[in-house]
Amino acid sequence: MARRSAEQPPRRPRAGGASTGEDAAGALGAGGAASGDPPAERFGVLAIARHRKDDDRALILYARVTQDPE
Amino acid sequence: MSELRFNELRGEHVDYAIHRQERTFLPARDHCPLCPTRPGGPPTEIPFAAFEIAVFDNRFPAFRAPRGAAEVVVYSDDHDASLGTLAAERVEALTWVWRQRYLELGAREDVDYVFIFENRGVEVGVTLHHPHGQIYGYPFLPPVPALELAADARLGGCAACVLLRDELAQERRVIYENESIVAYVPYAARWGYEVHVCLREHRPSLLACEARELRLLAEALQSVVRGYDALFGRPFPYVMAVHQAPTVGSAPESAAAGHVHVEFYPPLRTAEKLKYLAGSEQGAGTFISDMLPEESAATLREAIARAA
Image (cartoon, rainbow over all chains, first blue to last red):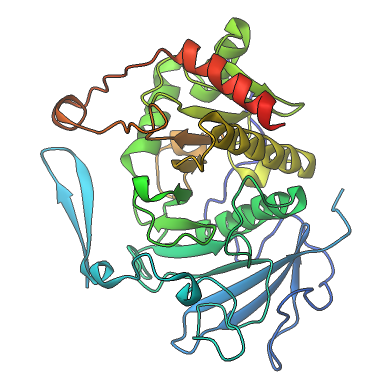
């Protein structure tokens, strides 16, 4: 019988409940958040900057940050 | 206009997304919508001068809220890159992007299954050459992951774990291994060069993976793709499918199961010949293959070694 991990997939978890929440990263290395956008979030090795396109579609830019979560 | 209909005879959904008929089709290089927006150049989907990885809502979605999601994942601002040629750190970051999107889309009430995939090559219907993948958030559990859950029930445990154990015991179809990942041509592969890339440990989804496992998954994926490209000395077309646990909240208990793995379905059977889904495959649901998995595994092992 295969081993089951204690960690299960997201069965409707709370929004934003990332398992690797850390301090918000600084400015993204490439692209960067446009003026007035919220500060970048941090998710594991990623810095996340969220934008809205002119037609209101979501656009998310991800950039690797140098410090690993390990 | 989108409409989801249920095909009673086959017991499966069909999605009618009529607006997709108008989607961008193999544009000229200087009109690529996935490139950064250049000064004086045409507007693109990503209005920045440079970026690392970008995710945006598909302009021509197969699914959209409040009944699912369709996203585009652009791997790089380099039009000529590929999963195999990107820096290792970028592909590792890509696995974190997949993980983050799984978490965010999986939390939505209208998404029961988060499906990450890449179509590579015109042979599998690619309409944009810029390196990218897609994510569909299905408002139902699609048939293929449902079959994997049924295999769990049939085998009395995680089917991926059982099959991986068998492949490791037999060895001859294994084409790549590292500390956390095994890649193999399955015993009953449907495609000549089909490969499954599987976590050694039972992990229902990327969320359950350790950081080290994500790094090694990225390494394994690049090794496989580089081996593919070395096989015939040309960019190798494929469909890459990331299978994880469903995210539906009201499914049977078995829906909590799943084992993250990545499946590659390449349509080439030789450098110039494609495998077509014809009468037996489409009309009877039975693949007829010209190649034994053990033989294609040996060929792929050599190609991966050449590309290393």
